[in-house]
Length: 464
Ligand SMILES: [Zn+2]
Image (cartoon, rainbow, N blue to C red; front, side, top):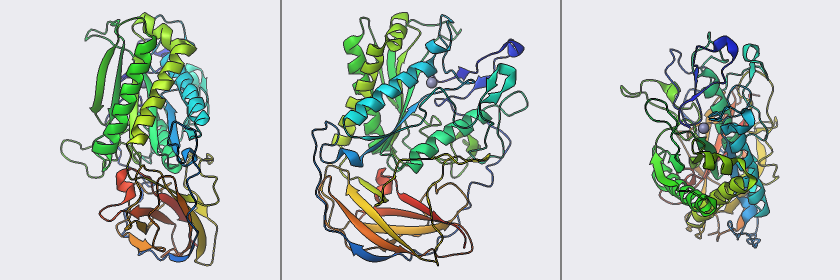
């Protein structure tokens, strides 16, 4: 649902507090982005040097329908829209309670999708596993007793209520969800929502439909982002159409900067003066927000509350992912060879919970074995090689490449689909006096894999 309301308690019965959803762009606030949004300092040159490269490890192969050569190299971030005490998403039109609201349906579909993906051998990061918010949900006036609110997007604001600028809670929550996908270096981010359709007077319209949003403002948006959105849209339309005993609409895909798919607003313009209307750190991979169905048609609401309908929606998303990954020519996973890649742990405190890994303190040099896997359908060009750059930053990770990316490591073999090698690098941060973040990607000759939507490997080194 595009605009939505907070759960309304008795004290606020007369006040509709407009909450931002994953599908809403936040309203302006007077506060500029804060300190955790690192200044873009000029990058020092990378100083990693190769130590060794392993023999090519063959693609393991599998019976999976999703990237059969090496499904375990694929990571999918699944975000169940809304959640927690304050954000139910769209309410049950019949006012029966929270288990009939959008947040419960999106969570059930996310669970079904996770199970389907895991059966196919895919690694899955669920952005929320339960009916909980990630960035705080503590608001006693409405009976909400979750964790204290955190300032995740670095605008110096956190919280919820009449004293807090509108949209603050939602911006921090959605930034947290983006951070989960980015820190996991997911191949795609799938945000699951359910719509409520009304006319201009606010009357509920008994219409069932599917619609998918992506952005065309990232380097990979107009190509990979659009293809992901089209695949997911077609998959869900077909799968729900097959089980729905009523007419449904296919609204297609739309490039629109909903918060969860939007890039950061790097340069405010007259038309877009407010950086807070877009995330501080946007998804570093193709992301799509799917309004799988709508609950204002009672039959569709009943279907989406039924495990059969939820399973069909999940199957449609899986089918869309199969289509997308089957058409993804050049792609890479770059990860620490030691693994532990998607086990993401929230940190304590009142700032961002999710951070990239920090390498242990060294004497200025760290030995880093990394696994590089061809997760596309095409063999890599012979020109593929590692690129590295550093940037001084206090942010959880870099939201854009450092200015200087230099070739590092040995010549890479032209890996076929699913094949991998392990390269051991000596990492030497350029400045021991400040925290440094490493951005590691691959060149394909005329661009980088991170520009194609394969997230870079990012690692931090603390000040010595
Ligand atoms: Zn929604």
